[in-house]
Structure formats: C-alpha cells, structure tokens
Image 1: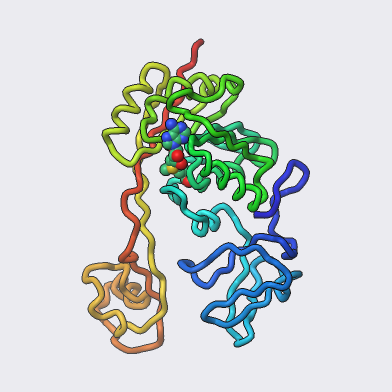
Image 2: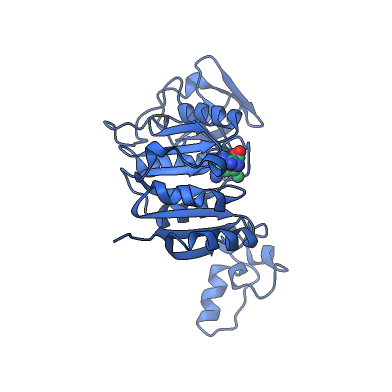
Length: 311
Ligand SMILES: C[S@@+](CC[C@H](N)C(=O)[O-])C[C@H]1O[C@@H](n2cnc3c(N)ncnc32)[C@H](O)[C@@H]1O
C-alpha cells in the first residue's frame, strides 16, 4: 500500500520507487508481495526479472524477464494484501470483510476497535476505510502476532492509522481511555461474550458491534450476552459463489455438469432464450461462464448489534 496520511490522497497513479511494496501478479491465484530493491532480482518459471527495470514504471505495468516472460506489478491494495499476507492465524477474506465494513458503517474519520488482530487481514481494510483521519486500535494477547502485525502495517504504509496493543481483551476488556469513543467494535475471539460488556462501554451512543464466530453455538451465546445492552441483533453467513469465465468451443464443454445454464456458451444460451433448439457443436470460440468447482464454503457467522440508546 502506498503511504496514506492526512495530507495525501490515497492514489496509485504514481510510479514505483525503490523500497516500494508491489504485488507481483502472475494469475488471480498466483501472486506475491515483494519489496522493490534496486540490485535484486525475482526468479520464477518465466525467467529472471531485474527490480531495477521496475523502478519508474506505473503500478499496473507489465514487466518482462530475460526470457520474454512477463508479470504485472500491482499496487498493494487491502484486497490484494489479504490474498498474499503471511498467515499467522485464520483470517477474514474479502466477502466477510466487505460486509463487515458496510454493516459497521465505517467511513473516513471513524474510530474502530478490534480484537484479535491475528494476521491483520481485516485490520488492513479497516485502516483504509477510516483513512485519512480516523484510527483503528487493534488488540491481540499474543505478543509475537502483535509485533508481526506492526511490521506489516509499517510495510504497507498504514502504521499511522493503526495502533496495535498487546492485551487480553476477554480477561481485561478494552482500555478505559477509549471508553465512549468508538464508532464500531469488531471481535474475532474464541469467547467473544466475555468481551461484550467492555465493547458496550467503548461504543458511542448507537455505535455498532460485530462478532465473528465459526460455529453457531458461539453465535447463540454471544447473542444472549448482547441482549442486555444491544438491540437489532442480526446474524449473517456470507457464502460467495465465484464464476469461472473462459473462452472455448462448445465441444470443449460437452460433458460439463449437466443442467447448468452457466456452462453453456453465450451463443447457444441466446438461441435457447429465443426458443430455438439449434445446438452448434462447432464454430468460433465463445465466452463461457460457469460456477467454479472449488468455491469457498462456510467461513463463519457475523453477528451485528447496535448499542441501546440510554435516552
Ligand atoms: C482468528 S485470529 C483473528 C484474525 C483476524 N480477524 C484477521 O483477519 O487476520 C484470532 C486472534 O485472536 C487472538 N486472541 C485470542 N484470545 C484473545 C484474547 N483473550 N485477547 C486478545 N486476543 C486474543 C489470537 O491470538 C488470534 O491472533
């Protein structure tokens, strides 16, 4: 990520410099984060890429190896960072993250509390959502995870937007100094119900709390605890269906899962929509879209609740 501060607008239009973090993109399922270092090289199946060739190029550029192979150099957005970060824990992915940001009503300037930090996947998106003047206070009781998260936020240029604290949030709650200051609180903890009374104290009037839990028993216990100080308690499970889009001839797709309109060539689908039974088995390549066979299933449940107003 490019540095975000209160004076700069988040922008990826500037050119790549020595020391920048870039996402080296081969395919949507094959990318990695690299810090550009003049004098270093990247070696992969496409050949050898000199970092010095990357300096001065715009983010999004296609760059070539000594063998004529190529990769793209993308800006490290939170969306891409989530896909390349080093997993120190289970993490939240894009479908849950985007829903969380929307439902917690997080906008620039918000103050957000989070625990645990884990691998900082959600924190990275929270930081961008509150930029340039908001702040995220994130807590984990695992010292080394906190250290690694700070290093990552430094690398991604977000450290001025995030404070990482080491604290047992289930045991001690959030720090008293933050009482009544949070617009929203997010919990990804094994026993979130223990942290709910403290989360309630931290929130501004009508602030929103979200708790992520992998199993429904935790959701029930969390919701039960929320009832005394929160209202509008709602739980969601975000299931994402991804489609594969590729070009081919009808013959290439014969024998694909039957009955899936998504697996039909566009041309054939249009014809059947027009009431014709004509089916071509040859012809020019056409674009197909069909559900991916390896779609991600259950990740967890997101329970949201709004603090009850006192007056
Ligand atoms: C599943 S991870 C969070 C992942 C994070 N949401 C992400 O997207 O990268 C849960 C984290 O909670 C931390 N944790 C567990 N119990 C805790 C407690 N009592 N206080 C603070 N952190 C705790 C763990 O150390 C772990 O790093």
